[in-house]
Length: 514
Length: 102
Image (cartoon, rainbow over all chains, first blue to last red; front, side, top):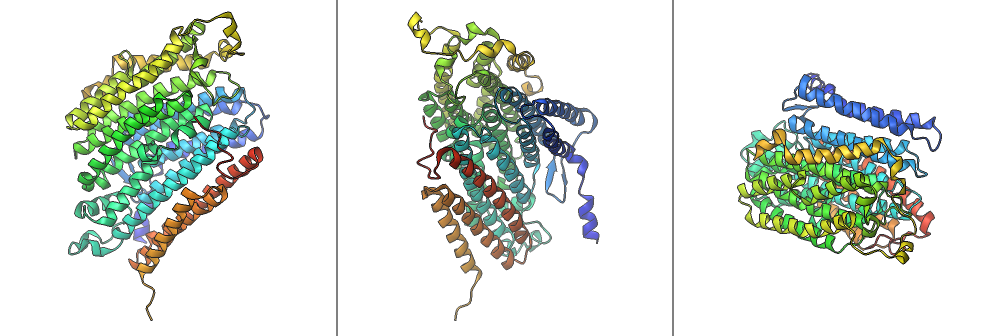
């Protein structure tokens, strides 16, 4: 009875109110959509308003009213702190932007909008639980909630065989990676659940939860050379490496980015990757810290390989969505350097984590400006964006051209935009952690990336080819005819570009990390 | 006569996982790929239950229920996608449905 009381007292439901509201809101939208006409978009507006309000209240909640300190709830299943709260606002912001993009995207197509927003919000609730999880059971369940929502979202465009194919590819690779992750968890559990591994220090074992992060942290610190534990840790990290698209598991990235609808590509690029990185940094600084000596060379190899693979493969792409996917792989490589740096500052790793946060936020603003403008193009097949479609966009539609260029500039790291500062912070933190080899790979990778990003900027801003009258037939239809008809959406996109420039010039509290 | 020990269960679990993994990597029929994915998860389940039994810790046995639920959702989504894809392309073989190329 007492054990039960202790357990129920640790369930503090108020700590996860944003997730509960989001999930209930998602259900409400699904029900609301039943009573609407097929092509009605009012559920999209409802979803946008709901998420904007939630983001606003959540920001106030932890900034002003109710500061969260590091605390465990739900019998050690979840852990809340300021970092987790920042990630929760990150996901809410990203999901709000996905809903805005999706609203604009679905309006012109014969697709129901209710399910799209429903799945987006459920995936976000799962992501928010995922970053707070403090127990491998919770981590697995949250990860799968997110993954199943994403499989459906990627295949959302049921009329297109490409979208369905991307969905099934993502499902197969995703399920494969989650089985690897599970097998890793099982190996850790197998060692952790038996008291033999502790030998004489039997008291560490008594009354502990063998899947909790704290207990596994103690176990790995005491036995860093145990072969089964090492195998388990490597399998878990490979499962997460799939989510972030790191090197040996990047094979799905170009195909899935290519086939999925544009807002979902943005969602995958931003939220799924950010969640993977936060979980990774939580794990390597929490339970896996005892194995840092074993993991650092592994991460160094993976990061270098990821950076070079992503950048070199992106250079040869004609399709812009594939190119962005591969450049996302390269970004994952850069961020892995930050993860390595955080392992070097063991115990006092906050600096590297703040750099990672800053980079993720900049990546969010840049990605959504790029994918938002790309989603506006009216192509016959919206998976086939090529460079030639963007010819002279800056002259035809100066504002959208500006937003797109600012997004690309931020991704590439060109000075007036925030991406430059983010990369600079990353390089400085890598230098401080003495990661000279990875630092060299990072700088070379950024230099290569300038090539393909600038190829795109050149198409947008300059007039690369002289046009003759006969050439007019080549593009039978201008994909940018619809642009003059959108109002509020344009403002949202512009504000993203303005944020990227402001953050490039003034970093606020993040600037202290220098 | 030799009795069945935890090691036997672990070998079985590894074998199931390995057969499933090879099936996912090598098979061309997407239905069989989905079945192989299930086989991998079942290998994980066998390992979990045997670990849980040997150490008399119930967490592993509980975990199995979550894995079974997740496997069911994954297969539900996978089969739905496969049916939709079959309607479009009239095939479930991976070489017939690959449109996403450079």
